[in-house]
Length: 111
Image 1 (cartoon, rainbow, N blue to C red):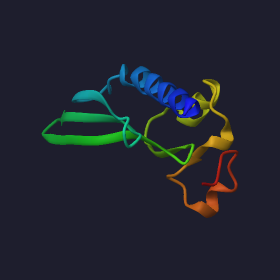
Image 2 (tube, rainbow, N blue to C red; image 1 turned 90 degrees about the horizontal axis):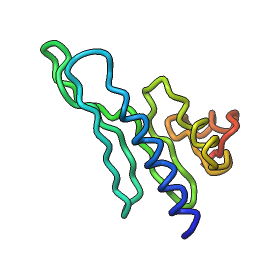
Image 3 (tube, helix red, strand yellow; image 1 turned 45 degrees about the horizontal axis):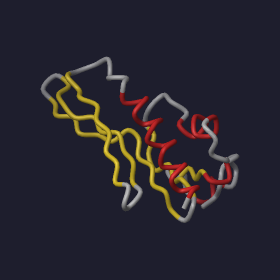
C-alpha cells in the first residue's frame, strides 16, 4: 500500500506541474483529473482553436497491479523519464500506448 501511495503522489505532482503549461494556441483550458479510487490520472485540454472545439487528454496514466501504465502522451514531455527521475523504477512503468511486442524493446516494463 505504501508503494501505491508513493506512486499516486509522484504521478499527481508531475501532472500538476505539466498542467501549468497552457498550449500556445487557441483558448484552451488545462485541467487535471484524478480518480484515486480506480487509479486513473489525466490532463484535459478543453476550449476553442479558431472555430473548432477542443476536447483532448494529452496525458493519461493508470496504476494497475503495482505498475504505472502510461496510456497516452501527446506532449513534448518524456513523462516516463520524469517518473524515473522522481523515484519510480523503469520496471514499474509500462508504455501502454505501444503494442506489447514493441514494449519488450524499450527500457520499461512489458506489462
